Image (cartoon, rainbow, N blue to C red; front, side, top):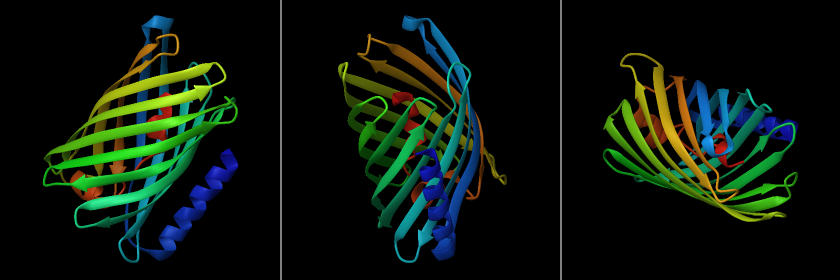
Length: 243
């Protein structure tokens, strides 16, 4: 699965370069801390990611991304996603497919995404289906996200994700509530970002706190343009806490 996914991302990227009218993307490095007091569990993860979005001729756009994460209390994780969407008159709608792979588990995620763009605010939503053959389970993921731009280089995000999973051990629900922010320095490609997520699941009533901090090197002149026109689509890596 890992090699198939990596090959698909690379092929889509080459196709995008060949047929693109415009390009948007970033390279990122982040550090994430997991804290689950109920289990007496604490861990840290370092992630490297690359995202590219290409405007195809017309109103269609494709985005590809790849991410590698090294977890100090477990296996390394590989994520990749391919999106195809259409943008028009302040709206965006499309579909995506991607996967997440560790040494012990492969998970896939596919679904629909959409967004509405206002002057300083973006409302985005996702409906997806998740499946893991190794874990012998599947489920549905629903997400809503609001993005507020204090100015064109300072954004604040609020996200709510709800998931229902069916496994041989029973049916489980999970809820993620997140608050994130990103700031891009003027006359620079560099932006810094950070956030907090509370993950609550009825699997043994586990409640976890997730903190993240990182930076990105961007190709776009400001974050608002990246949101409205560029590399701002769904990434399977954004759902990695659920797997």
